[in-house]
Image (cartoon, rainbow, N blue to C red; front, side, top):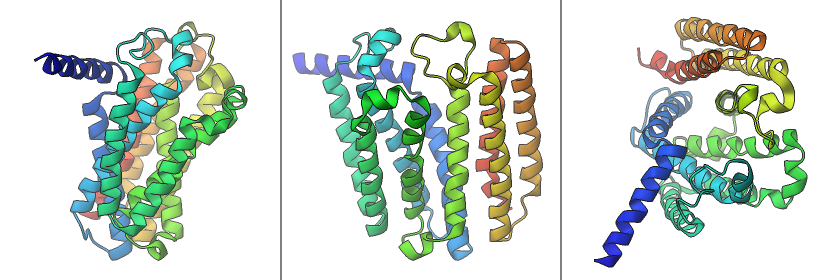
Length: 306
């Protein structure tokens, strides 16, 4: 009886944690949209059609589990930092002991390993590379203070995890090293990386009054104008590369190209308004339009079946 009460309490604590720090429904939907896009484009390029629907499930689950584990390991890595600068965050305020975060992350890791093995030798190799890089990130590349004092280097080191992640997800759909070693997939990973980085930047965009001494946002480091320029450059890269990928496959992209370009113009307009006047309304507009832009890019796979 006592054990069941304790277990129920832990479940409640994890539920509270995920509500505050990691919306399971939101990220599950995001994982599915990204993954169905990855599966369709990868398989259509490799074989000219969708060869395996099961790969979509593997890809979505693999991405979702990675995001959950990354969130948990970030909590462990940033625990001391959060106690100083973000004391109201669930782990920092003691909602969950770190030991439970470790245990749950190892359960997630076991499921990830299982999926990589089911995907075949190629996906297993890419997963080991991804896991190795994740462990380096957890240990902050054995240079914690050096990296934290160099914001740009810190961001580059952590964002590079996108490369093994997306090659791993592609390998769950195209189980051949020779097939993956192609300019199409290099460009595809670059495009996915730009989309992910774009979401990361706008997610951390906030007004000056909400900044703290940690200065761990792009605007606090680079200013509003430079950050806005980075966002615009990423958007242009995404539109150009996505369009070229569909040219390679031999499918029309102009409808999605127009819709996504118009949506990104709204992102740019919101950025201009934000530069002129800091207001939460413009921050919300930037976030909403940027998310819509990336979602449009990722549902463009419909061009392959319509």
